[in-house]
Amino acid sequence: MKKIVLITKDAVSKNYLPVYKNKYWKTPNMEELANKGTVYNRHYTVAASTAMAFYSMITGENCFQTSCKDYGDEQPFNGETIFDKFEKLGYKTYLIWDKTYTSFAKQHLKIVDGKTEVISLDIIPNIPPHQKGIFDDLTFKDKDTNLAMKRIKDMFLELGEKDENSFVWIHLPHVLAGRNSYCSDIDLFDDVVGYAREIFGDESIFISADHGNMDGKNGKFGYGFDLEETAICIPLISPRVENLSEIDFLTSNLDLFDILLRKPNKQEYVVSDTAYYCQPKRKIAIIHSHFKLIYDKSKKRFCLFDLNWDPDEKYNLFYPEFYDVDRMSWYSLNQRFFYPFWSEAIKEKELLLKRFDEIWRVGSTCIELKNKIKFRLKYLYKSMKKSKINKSFKNVGK
Image (cartoon, rainbow, N blue to C red; front, side, top):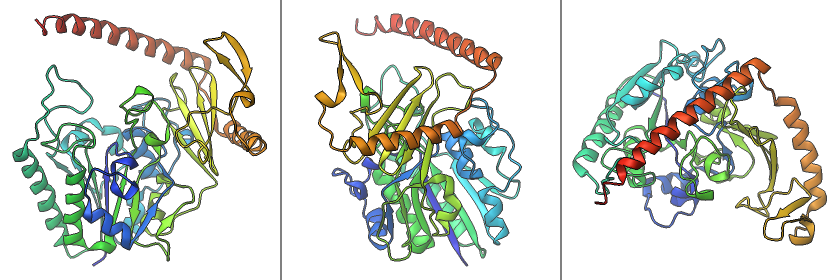
């Protein structure tokens, strides 16, 4: 019977994996699959956070195309989901994740049909991935790890024995049980891939992520609020597509269904969002060729990067002048920065701005104002809460 197994991991940046040049971890299973299969080098997530990315991966609908106004406002979807499409092809569908996803991700489940079996496992550590404990325990807890890995393998064994065509999507959490930080469990990620190889076979397995994270870029270590490459350009390893060991054209997890059928679509433009259209802190990125435009709604500011010339996204080509804070004067960028492709950048800027104008929208004045006030109140509440926590920490050193 035919099996299609998608293994995604939350918040995994490409640079965590040796397939993409990481020099610390050993991931023999992923590397062997990469050697046999196809590695995608320019695969982007449609959104920089789990809820939004999942909504788009399941529905095939861009964030800017939905009726969702803000985060948590995901609406029931009336079109065909990825699960509907596989069921039409005769596949039984499964979605496996940690039990916490089932409880907090109710908006995801609005778009998962009743035929799909959602399986909840207990596979994350006790320390929540989004919060800081007063004392962070840096030791690995092998007992917790072994129990979580056994649960995953047992589930794979159970599904592998079923006499049916099946689409199995397992989403691993930010950190697997027994480990303590992002990227501390890449060896376990590879072990999960190894279990899948053993039970389902190499030609069934796809490896990816829902989004990346900032990984220290610009002093940030989270995700969901920024669109730098480490946050939105994600890993993808698949069985061999035609005769291609690597794919360098633009692809998006918006086209997940076609990718799983080994029919990736070459995208002219790729769009990635941090928020829905009425949210005040929204950023949107549009990538075309090797140029990337980012718009920051709250700052009303554009950035333009040439990813070939400047993969670290340090030089904003959008504005012809820059302000030197030391000399307190404005200067022409082309006088201070050698860049031999200005004419190409200007053409790309025009193309990207035209695309931006086609897809950008905002809410009514009333809704936009309401969301700004709501965000401001939330910010003030968190600031007050942080102030209280900081006061309590003063006694810890004593």
